[in-house]
Image 1: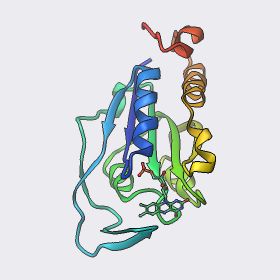
Image 2 (image 1 turned 135 degrees about the vertical axis):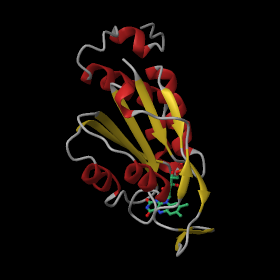
Image 3 (image 1 turned 90 degrees about the vertical axis):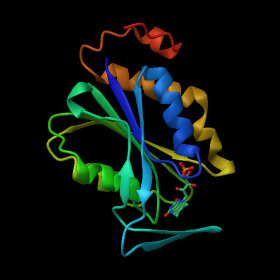
Image 4 (image 1 turned 180 degrees about the vertical axis):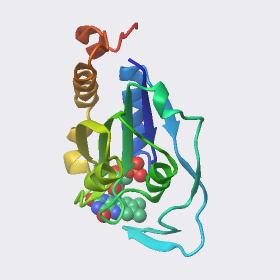
Length: 176
Ligand SMILES: Cc1cc2nc3c(=O)[nH]c(=O)nc-3n(C[C@H](O)[C@H](O)[C@H](O)COP(=O)(O)O)c2cc1C
């Protein structure tokens, strides 16, 4: 199976999960970086963060051709009850049709419309699974290595003909 993990991370939680998934799925990492916050920025506030960025800032990322992948995993932190602006820009800049996706988000209190906002942008594609990772200290157990490995295993099982022996995926020893 050829998989890509496309993600934005501001504080590192989404990146940590994305890194684990890249390892478990033997996937290509596509990190999104904001290069220009854009005109007419919104103000996003959270704890001590005050971030000025438009809803669709200019981003950059490694070369990405959706057709090359059997599975595209999308990961984002929840910002103001929705997806991160960087992921919104990515989704707006791509044409996806008949691709398979898995979605995950990192949040502290409320996922809001984050996952449904992604789903709405992926009409005509298949969402094989979704995962939510609560990143507060109290719930950080949701981000354990075992849970992420188990999710990766489920994703492989959902892709017809991935040809990957599940025990090997669980052990991070995928060879095909
Ligand atoms: C600007 C901003 C807005 C946020 N808004 C929300 C929110 O609406 N709901 C929520 O549960 N968490 C919210 N959070 C918390 C993040 O979703 C959470 O800390 C996540 O783990 C961060 O992922 P990251 O480390 O990959 O950036 C917000 C964080 C930031 C920086």
